Image (cartoon, rainbow, N blue to C red):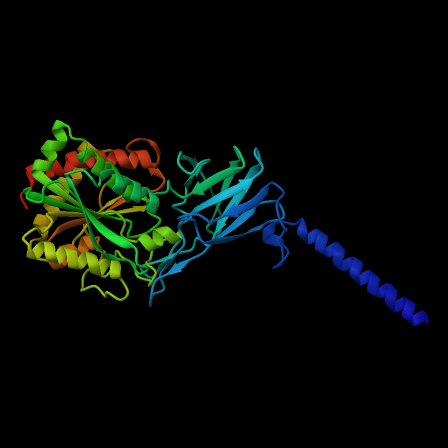
Length: 423
């Protein structure tokens, strides 16, 4: 009997000791906790909503100090070590006035087979109460490729995005607004992996002396290109004397959103078959894995067969540097191509806020659209990155209105370019 009482007391002591230990671990910092010992919630946050168009795939948990730890989900390239998780777009639902601390994890990406991290590039995010009016705010870098964001809730809802979003619905509104314009032709060219329609938007007369091609959103998170395209199209359709002058000299062709599936699903880099749409342009496209590129390749080759080869092509992207990537594939006449691109760079500096410069002469990123179209089709082509954090030329955070103004000024750049260069 005595032994039974002692056994019960010992068991009670173990239970109390375990409870005390668990309570102590629940109040410790996240970095010192064993697996599974995280706080259940933070009282000010109701929910992180990702149920809307273009939202990030993610999951989240809470540190004991109330920090909201967000784990972004990677997308992966087929038969490659490359992976990416750089898209940020979610909706905080929390108490008005609450001060929330958010930490982003899973930022260690692999690019061209090389380990890296977007933590160095994630220096700011954009926030919005209504999902339409955005402002940029800085983030804080942490050790081990982590990034922290502190926000105060202005109301019960606050959207957070890496850069100002541009969604399928935004493109649809643009296309509706221009479709009836006699200067515009919108031509379906094929479908994405999931069956979304891809279109080429032509602005101007196809009989104009010169032709320019632009493509945006091969990588879904990189919204800057969409804003640039919108600004350029609207400028050319303004109908003033300058717009008429521009369109007498050149005709614009645009694929405004190459990776629609990725944009809809909140992807970062690849299409739904695990293909990077800004790679493998140095060889014929595999239509099974990259139908988005296959239909563009078919359209381009039909244009060439009809005697309407583009004289200049520009592939639009975002990164942390904002450089102009001048293609240097091993082709005859490369020096003349480089000279023409130097003229383009000079005009960008003259007529836009572009100040970042171009890649070094030794740079060669084989298989990009800029590189592949030059090598296979003899088209002057470049990849134009836009800094996702800071625009030095306007001394401001990267925002949609700045990229739209850049697109507006591209109309002048192209006009001057074809006045100086005769491809």
